[in-house]
Image (cartoon, rainbow, N blue to C red; front, side, top):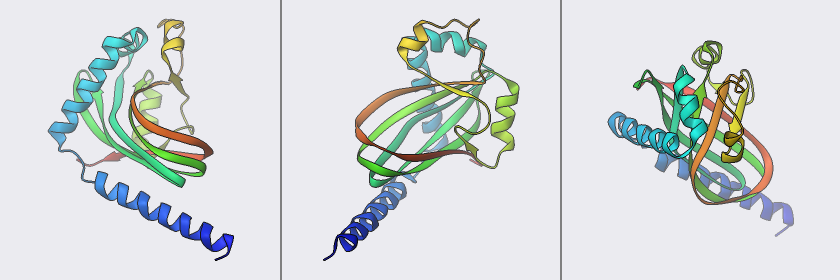
Length: 185
């Protein structure tokens, strides 16, 4: 068997594994369960990260993906559902999905929250046929070290994102795309 045949077999089995992963996670949570897990994740983030609490008080909306599953071997993918919170109530439902290619291996779950600070950023999400992270409004990914050095007067970007609850191990270098799409739940 040549190296190209072996590589092709590995790639095809990786793609098949990713599709099976998505098929099993595509059994989306019920609306009530998603609301509950999303609200719980947001409350935990706000309670444990002071800058997230400060942002939540100024944000016009917060999009929370409580659990995203990511896996791959050379070819990878990720998937998760989330809730848009406005004025403390669920306003809409979204899906995030992505694909990647490169030197990578592993699996992990994590969540993330996006604090929308400007109406124009929220409109970009609602008006787009799928919002691609990295295209359009500026998104700043915060970590706890960054969060400690910012106040609500120095935070002037469109969207601030926090990644939380990481479990598992995913390592690699590659090209990745991520898209957020509004659901009609």
